[in-house]
Image (cartoon, rainbow over all chains, first blue to last red; front, side, top):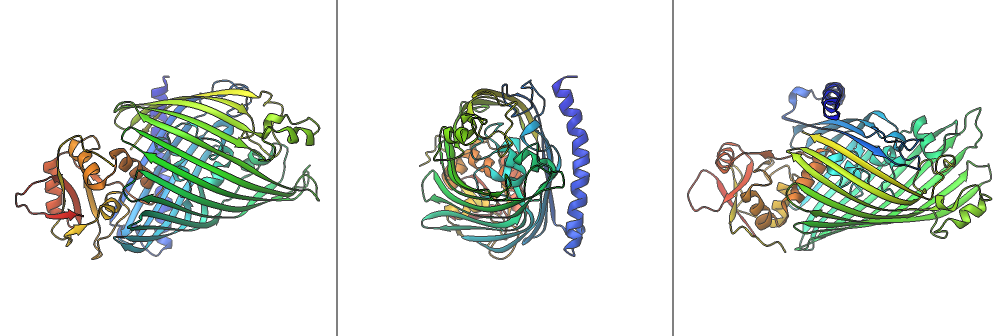
Length: 410
Length: 126
């Protein structure tokens, strides 16, 4: 069976299954609000299906063998019901398979009520209640939607795939406001919630050896974006504060633990008719208490960021190039302290991960795109799991990744 | 700054129920990026656009919105796949645009500038 035929059959099956699931969820949401779907004035449906091939030799990024893989499947369908000019309900269900990158399967990506509190020509304020998308980083709200990404694999310093499920959406409340005045255009976001963590997600983050369960206590975020009047620049700032706990099981080799993650990130985006320049840089504080042993305590500051250039070669072809940089501990940029503290058991290259990548995308037809890219990587600091790393598979300081993906959306 | 290579001039048109004479460029951007969902009188905003590659759409983006067309596409994709907005309704020709604006309450669109009297409200962008 050709890849195209496989895509078509798979897309049809998934679309029927996903639409049915999503319609049920949206109906329940409306009923819970005391409204029936029949009162809706407008419904919009959108979706996407993408299938690709990927290989990351000499690393466990996709699989343990480093062989080429078809674990590059992304399917989603969403609906938005406009109940009246002030109230909306929106939801999206996705099916993802990214190999070792994140837990695979069917996921409720978002499902929330959107209440427009203020809707003036120069000022708008919305409140989102439910499972809302992360609106705080440049690609965070649609990192799981292939057609909105400039590359198949996003820069791992900021968009660490093992954290995808935690970073993409949360259950709670979010506010978004837009302001326009003589200084330019402003967008301010605030959110408070948490994300349920599965056992698979726990193992992906902490290590295959752990037997217990982790829980995100909360994630509190705020961000601001500013486009000065009459310029092609947008600059932004985002803040994140989150706490996780690990609870051991009876047969566990680890101990109860708490993890605090705090991130400060700056971003900039410059646009021209045929090219764009995008960058996000951050510093992240991570506190670990317990887990390795009851009295264990460690605080370290990681740093990272990327610079990405996009160039529109012609109406159908776009090129991209990205430099990505990440260090686990800013006071140990080459991982020597990490190696020394583990008696040489963990190689120094687990303390960082830097990469360069190039990519190309072709618009084969309206809403049909083929994308390809290649990454050259040094270090394994952003290969999951990070707390108890995979020392058996990740035995190389230098490794490479290529990916090819065909995507269709409606 | 964005410079027009096409030499066209465009104007913003709305259904006569939209009682506005002027909008600023930033207010117009909010409307066409689908963030503004209501007019000041509370009626729903209904946005009509031509295809991204249409010369009139490209000129409208540059002249009136002061954006590149791909930026609008990107915003619409981000809104419609994160649940916080919808895409505008796309029409296939300027004739269809004129017809939809004339017949749809709360609608807004654009056309090549014309002095001919028609059943639409021409909004000045300041």
